Image (cartoon, rainbow, N blue to C red):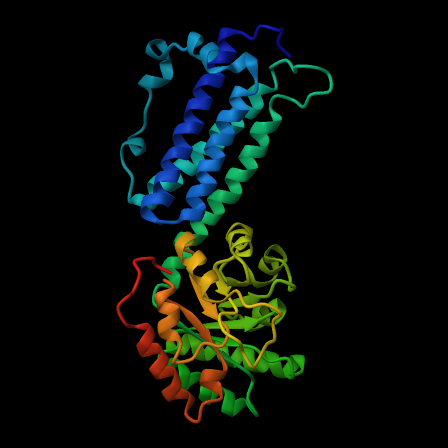
Length: 366
């Protein structure tokens, strides 16, 4: 522990780390603002940047004026040391990734060296505590940024997710899955509460194999264990299902994790909690599920305006209401009964997929 007047050398370390952290988070903020065009992640970056400023201002011994008085940029040996990699970035994402790492490293440096600062009194937390908390927040934010960029790439061509049950028998199910992939469904989600586990697993394995063969995605509703055992592309979770952390430990690092959201607060939280896509709704009344309240199109508009993680509008959507969804800025939907209960499911899927392929009403990429 240093005395009441920290050394100039310590101030130089803290000054460099503080500047590095503030600069890095601003670069990351510019990426999510102008490249991902994501209002939610931009707000998270901005809040972290402001909280960093507040944490620095809250410790009188490292006030900006004190740090600046000790700054010796002209004589800093580090300014004359560089590597060839520092002068090149492969793409926009690489710029963001480099600065996410720089932010975390700078916060760790602040945290460690702040431990040498005197506490204001015996009961006050260590001056390093706020920087530790900010570092952990930066890890969560960094993961959400990377997931958003990767999910947008992976789901770029998936507009229609068909929600299907296991049908009367395995052969009927397999035929339906192949027909739907052939007629515009980019993903199929298996939802069935009536099959026993062995039957459900058999359907899930079949769906995963068909999806690989057809170039689509296989999603299993609720059951992370079935999704993992079937090697499906992902699992879809409701608000009362397994948390994303536990589901991820079952399905593995490459699987998609969808999360149903019924409010903008739930959608924001899902982005940070590990979702790789969102289900948003219910949009309209549905015959398959009952809800006390319907957030409706208003929620679709909120999500489309704030969040660019892929999001599927869900709940009572059919060919007649696709245009209403598109007008909200959403470009993806999940449809069950309007397809599976139709006299010709393939034709129903084809009509909805064609409507989704129409030019976007809004520039928002959801």
